[in-house]
Length: 500
Image (cartoon, rainbow, N blue to C red; front, side):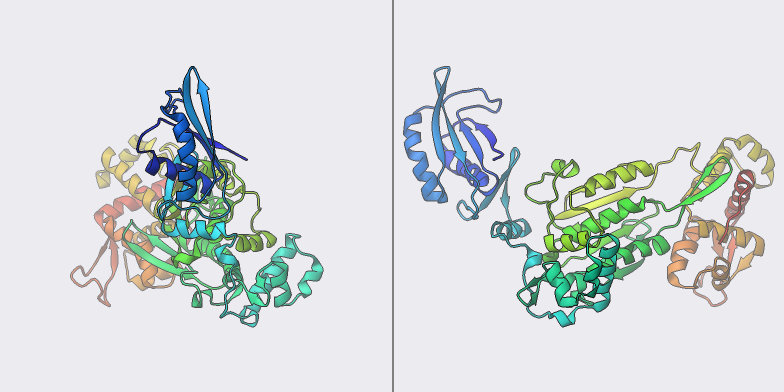
């Protein structure tokens, strides 16, 4: 047994402090409490050790209801006590509180952590409990077929298993209790799992800043289908390809390592505490992406251990097993290491892991790219004197040119196309602008691509006092014309074209 040891000086008020420690060890992996040593492990001794040896076992038994092995040790003519506590299979409380010891810390379990601890002590996981108001016939056949095909491709079921019916598949995956589906079965395969379990959706939002939501979506349906739908939506609607330059060659890539992003999303689905009713939340910004799921770390893992190499300890083992059989994950606790290594290979900063808010939040930040290599726009800064000599008609100063370059760096590609379109066509209605960039004329696209140009002063409205007028048109401001000039020069320098 992995015995942890804590050394503490003797205090007369031992009962409240020390019994809490002993309770914590009994609820964890067990441990040894040394009384009569200081924090550095140096023996300071205790008085009346024999009397304590007689009294302490009775107090521990009467108050905690457990048996501890207590010995007197002597070193350098000083006595100290060793209290060895075994791990107990049942929950142990001290004055109605459940303590838990891990490493050098002791915590009093409350709320969700206490509920999870009590369930774990009984050997029952939340997702393994039967759900009485869902029948096997209620499950979605499309979701089950999708699982079977994925599992076959991953070689984690046999080809003959493709012929199994819904009931037999649930038996194969241990998702049925007698004839009753477990909660995991309803989450994984019911067409509308939120009908029975609140918050079983994934919410995605595109944010201009922490409070300004431009547009959002909700991914619903069986959990087994949600991950693929979410990744597809992130790639097609919520992120634009990163543009970088190698010499004059323009290269576009998805701005995040897909394998790392997929792993983070699958971890959120598998480890979420579904008893909270809080959806998984994904916030997308221009320069970062955040995934949050409710659910505290397993009691056995500290944040430091979680970020290192550790065994697989799924919060929802039945859900995790199904995702494993489908070939979506491995069962070795390597998820965090995959996220870190794939981000490093992609050249991203190390993802940030935040354990606040009773859950886990992972933040992927895009590259902090140096000015010399950032993009075709930054190329201009190395040739600023030449640029100024060509731009006397705009009276560009070095500071203004740098401001324009910085502004261009914040804009998405379709916003850049709008600038070039308005330079050519002088003034256009919103509908006409959206036609040029091949997007629907709706509020979402307006907020994402046109509003940043208005806010930065690049584009003006022709009817300023009536912004929603049916006769409203958009034109480049004087500043916008300077931006268009710099943009065109950038494209000339890199020998590239913007494509809608």
